[in-house]
Length: 110
Length: 114
Image (tube, rainbow over all chains, first blue to last red; front, side):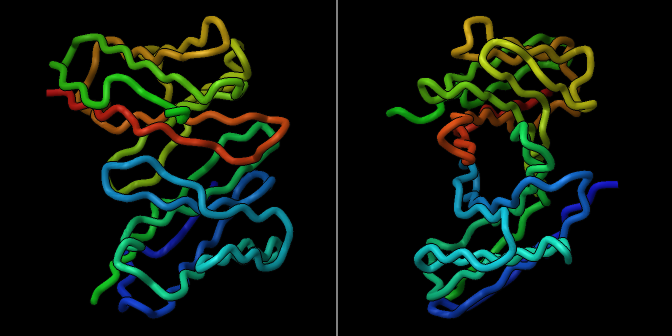
């Protein structure tokens, strides 16, 4: 089967750091994406990893280990506006369709 | 606004009726994808087009569903004889294959079947 697993919900305090883990087992691998989705809105792109290692982009970083089928998204200096669902998605082939996890709801508290 | 647009944003219909949604991708994006998202879940792939050619359909796309992209620009997704299980957010995304790996999502059409 094909699975993309991530925690359902995480809570953190404003200004803190949160790490969202994603493990995947898919028929193929051609890249891993992280998207942010606020309630009732479209997913917006955060990061893309295709090679092992860390990609840093401002307050957001994403890590990939292809041998372990593992990725994480690191959110630093949390702000209230970061409260949203974070979706891990794998591109199994070069055609571009994405297989998404169920999303991790991050709740940022004052 | 040069992003992906979808119309309508909300649709309420009675079971058994047909509905059609429209997606206008970002200009010159040659790939167009349709996804379905239910509450608390991530988007599920339905189908995609390369220009006007429909290249893949998910097993989720029963024979009541049909999608077209007649001129390689906008796309329509039709659901015939709607069922309550069709209630979901239908998302469209587009991508320019050569220059970008990122899919840009539209705001979605929320379908409620009563």
